[in-house]
Image 1: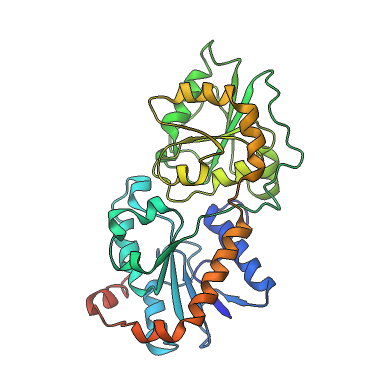
Image 2: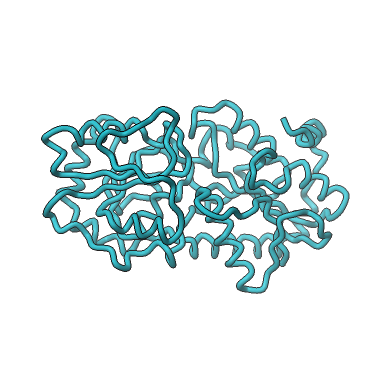
Length: 341
């Protein structure tokens, strides 16, 4: 099988999408499949559309190029569109329309979380031919080897990390925690480290800040803490909580977006009203939660196994899919995908 992915792998810390593609390429090539990142070959079986944004530095071809490939070079290639974004995530006003337009070329849509699939945007044709495959982190890197759980003595060390420096990654809570660390009730009980990019103008007074890390260096830093905090709002299907959890860290997670789907049973959920109470609950229940973390399921191996199985199933059904596909069903959308705006 030959798979074309419209995403070029970048070196260094580059976000969850980069790590996902790296893991998927490894999974495909290890079983003898071929992976390319361009639409030059005429014998491509599966095209994976990761990102429709033509100006993104990692994007190698666009939805418009996919449609031209299907029309003029290889009509029997099958297109899978992985959805891991939405306007709700960052309070933007363009992403949903861009994703919906790009989805015109897809034979099958994969959502990285059920919350994302259930947005009103996707109630229709795309939802009728879709699946949910949750993200996972590389357990070869993110694992609890060498990690020491909190003994109950001294400060509980919390950590979070984000590649995207958007306020909705949870900075209302992170800034609140920065203030709490200056209060007598908390400053001896907890510590907090933020790893990653910050919104413009944001600085911490009491939080330890570490610039973006990746791979083994990131895993080592995570394992130097006791518990993982994610306060992200409307997260479509993040990978950061997976990396923390696979290192053994119990989760303190916001009840928003995909996070309950990924985190339930492996930590304590909170909202903006009860954050301090839920933090106390995490402290009280820490020992039991730490024991449960060895069963955390969201690994890259499982994610990639599910994608490869989907690709195999689609190839087996190629004739049926090809017969029911009508690329000219909406000429306006087909042509609209040829423009980059």
